[in-house]
Length: 128
Image 1 (cartoon, helix red, strand yellow):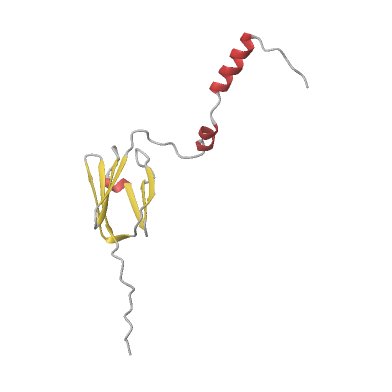
Image 2 (cartoon, helix red, strand yellow; image 1 turned 180 degrees about the vertical axis):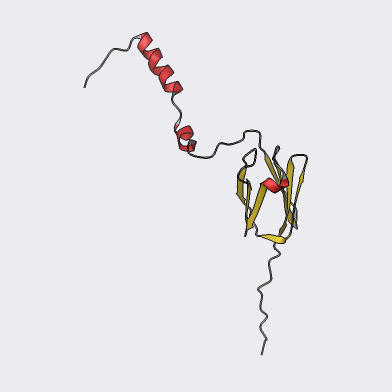
């Protein structure tokens, strides 16, 4: 085993070099799309629906794409839009896309997503 003495200048250089390196989390996220730190989303629910609100300034309704598949909601901006947004979430209940609505007003996209009413699967047996 070889020990090398660390001088105060060498220690400082080592500490500063370590601080300049990206952390493991930053390294793992480097290949992901850049995130917009000002984009926010809020999710609320009541008995019949979920309400999701997104801050998406700088894009028009034609430049936004909302997809619903079961209980997964995906929001993204179209290719060529001046700003890029990407969001996906899994909700605890399936969404009825035919009863849902989306509205873009003053840079805020509001999704009113109707919950699927579960059909009763109870079968009554005749007693003999």
